[in-house]
Amino acid sequence: MTEKNIYIDIETTGLSKKSDQITVVGAFNGENFTQLVAGHNLCLENLQKLFENPSRIVSFNGKRFDLPFITRHFSELEIDCREHCDLMELGWALGLSGGLKSLEVQLGLSRQSGVSNGLEAVLLWNDFKSNGNEESLTKLLEYNREDVMNLVTLEKVLKNMALERNENGF
Image 1: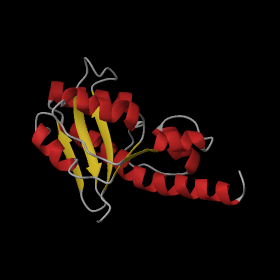
Image 2: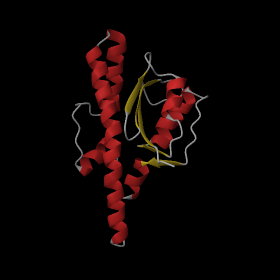
Image 3: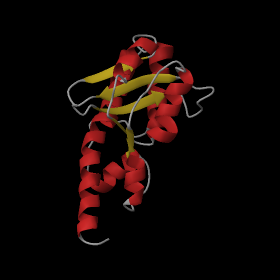
Image 4: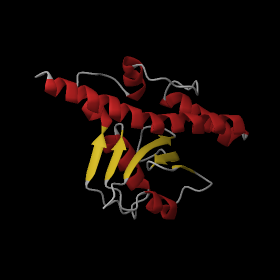
């Protein structure tokens, strides 16, 4: 059976699973990158297609944030996955600290969108929804794409760090 990994990251209107909403779900399955956007194509059916039979889910803080947020808002979504690799946990186990952007800086991974954090992502969504600013939506989608695609690189870097530590007896 072929391994099917899904790298996933979401953007939201805030941190509360109860009162805030999902604005973007970005996912990469090793071949295709998909973004589901609230008010456009973010729905249960499309989410179910994203989560069809993954071998592994890879995220950053996805165990505590992304997946609980998704399943809270899409309670009928079925996610049947053997393994969830949360890169935040792996990074922290290796002595790195902070969120995704902090780890990227510590490891020399670059970004091009110019969006520096989740709060700015919320502001971009609000500008798009309130003012119809398509540039804000485009920038938000670029930011989300960087989040997802950097998970692929971050996973490789962190796994190499873990291997080196194991080989060196740390």
